[in-house]
Image 1 (cartoon, one colour):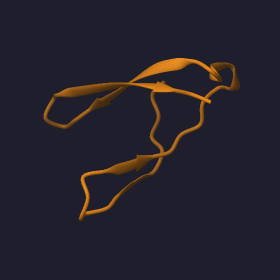
Image 2 (cartoon, rainbow, N blue to C red):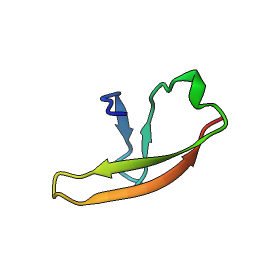
Image 3 (cartoon, rainbow, N blue to C red):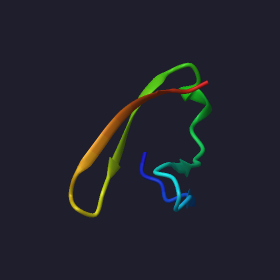
Image 4 (cartoon, one colour):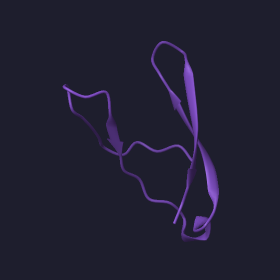
Length: 50
């Protein structure tokens, strides 16, 4: 699900907060999240939605 929500980055940490809304039908499911960087690399993680 492509999205362009606001992100917050703390310069002293290597952690970002990414906030988005999902369809209520996705409750209690697992989804794969892909982060594509400007250098062309992709990073994946699986998340569980409550």
